[in-house]
Image (cartoon, rainbow, N blue to C red; front, side):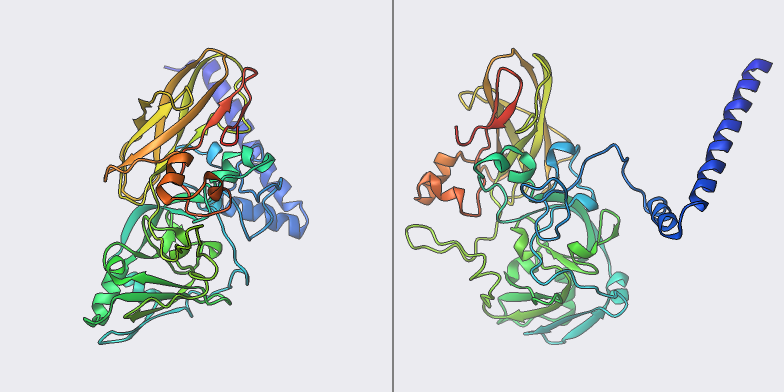
Amino acid sequence: MASHSDRRRFLKRGGALASFVIGTVRSLRGQTPAREAILKDSLAYGQPSPFDNTIRRTLGQATAISDTALTTPLQDLDGIITPSGLHFLMDHVKGVPDIDSKQHRLLVHGMVDHPLIYTMDELKRLPSVSRIYFLECNANNRPIRGPNGESVQNVHGRTSCSEWTGVLLSALLNECGVQKEASWIVAEGSDANKYTMSIPLAKAMDDILVAYAQNGEPVRPQQGYPLRLVVPGWEAIRSVKWLSRIKVVDQPYMAWHESGNNADTIPNGKGLWYRFEVGPNSVITRPSGGQRLPGRGFYEITGLAWTGGGAVTKVEVSVDGGRSYKEAALQQPVHRFAHTRFRFPWAWNGEETVLQSRCTDERGEVQPTVAEAAKNLGVPPDYFYQADHFNGVQPWKVNRDGSVQNALFL
């Protein structure tokens, strides 16, 4: 039985809590209308602590104020899910459209027996699925020289992983009746640019998601509200935002966004117009460039791995610059086409060394070094300093003073 003094302490604490709550409400009411609206909004939709600096950033900038290219702070995150507000964001040449979901429509037409127009309510009445998928920009991992290349956020931050909810595209195509001569679809957004991408019909009938929710809430405007494609395992340029039209066709359209703007030409004259799948990839996020170890002793090396080849089956970590590798522990469960968190125990002796990781996927494909990737493609290593579609091993050098830097150019 509690003593009288215990009860008195409880009542005092309860009174203090009540005073705090009442004081907070009074202080809120005492603000100017504009300030009061801001405070109410911060309570209505939960905001991070003001002491937390986990934000998206533009390359070389101190704050995230641009809506053209914002990178995910991989070094600050744990687990595999990227919060919706930290999902990377790439170019919107004509800005983000302001779309009323009640007025939005999705047209499915072309080489189908029954062209259909769906409202958002009609889409949400169909059987839904929720799946954890990563998205990665085709320009992610591009080696960056200079100060901007020190941060894992700047070099590798154009990939994020979310739980996406929506309707399988195959369900819509089956309802419309795809004709046997069809072999591709063309997806179009309702932005001012009419962003357009061609996708093989086989992929469309497999696992592509027409998503209206991300991490349990409606897809955010910068991520395609109210509707977007999510093409698992493929470069994110195929995951069309603000989706308004799907045309079933018998050949790729080679629209400007997929040919003239995102096509690489390598020195042997070959083009990479239709390079879809993301190769096996991984990066150590802690310790990583720009960070500092306070002293010798135990550290947990952690990072992310992902692949367009299905599931990550193994991640190996080297603490001696690639001379030897040991297998890291993978956070369970491991999802196909999702980020996979890996962890590796390490005792730093205070000496200079290089940390790096490599990923192996379920098809047995192994993440290459820069030299191996150059050899496979028949190009010089410097090619990757300007090209997209890169998944080479990322080394981080730990100096004797504990500072960590990008070792790719050392």
